[in-house]
Structures are given as C-alpha cells and as structure tokens.
Image 1 (cartoon, rainbow, N blue to C red):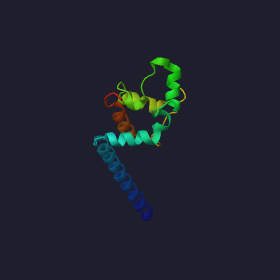
Image 2: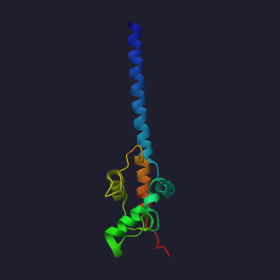
Image 3: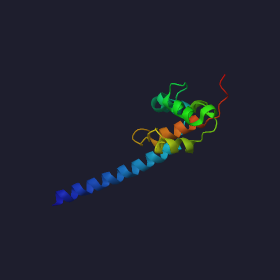
Image 4: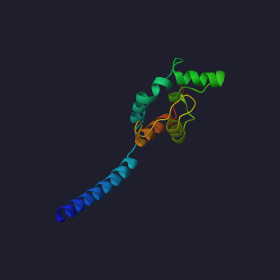
Length: 125
C-alpha cells in the first residue's frame, strides 16, 4: 500500500513539473522573434506547390478562374496580406485548399509564415 502511495505521489510530482515546464516553454516560444527566413522555409515546405509563382500552380490557377484579369499577385508578391488573414486560410482552408492542422503547421510556424507573407515587398520586375 505504501509503495502505491509513493508511486502515485511521484507521478503527481512528475506531471506537475512537466505541466509547468510546458507552460514555460510555450511562453518562451511565443516571445521568440520570428525571422522572415523561417517563414520562407514554411512557405517552401507547405505552400509553394500550389501557391508558387507561375500559371501551373493550382492555387494560382484557381485564383485566375475566380478573378480573371483582376487576379491578385502570387502570394509572395502580394502586399495586402496580414498574418491574421494567412492564419485564417491556413487553419480553415478555402474552396479547394485544405485546412492545415497544428500537427502539420505549428502555431509558431504559422506565425512565421504570416509574418513572411505580410512583409511589404518592392514590386517584381
């Protein structure tokens, strides 16, 4: 009986320590600066296949069908995107674009992606 009480006590302490550690890690990650390079890497990993520059990209073709001549620029060239808008489309999907879960694109990666796509860029020549 005493042995079980010790095991339960040890498990409770381990769980409390882990939970506290996870909270501290989560807060630390939220405070880390996001670099454009990390957002670009997320874009290359998850987005470029459908949203890269060029008419052969399914996302670009979908936008062309929807907007015709008034089609917005490729995602990396747009100047009207906000991190919140990017996060909304990534987490909820739209039309034929699937949603992406936190197990695929973490919140930290999503914040970096949003920061990257929201940067104001000079026009491409």
